[in-house]
Length: 169
Image (cartoon, rainbow, N blue to C red):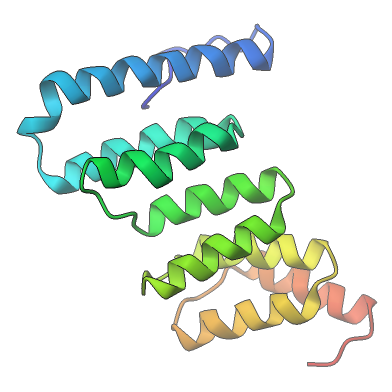
């Protein structure tokens, strides 16, 4: 996988592993920019950049991830896709920045990029866990309108929370 050792060593502290992963990702991006990038199709370039972004998002390095998202993608003439937004939304949720996650979701919709089932699920889970039931129900309705099937675990979580809070929908 991009940015990871072939046989990862989980014995070290998490911060050390994150630093190593980010250093590997930067080295691969340098190789990409200098040697491989010019020869690649736009689709493959987007794939590489998405996984580069994912390394930083997985490490919850929001400053670096946002810089990649806002500067590096346009610099290379790449338009974020559903995977790009899902990665960023997941990072914001992991950082407990639900407002940031919903802002990215709104930006995604404004660009007419169709969210995946997992993107809808991540948002429903985050909103439901914070008792933002109305917002979670709106996201579920948007998924239904887009004809995207949300995984049962997210729907069941929302139903359970609605019952617990005595919310009828």
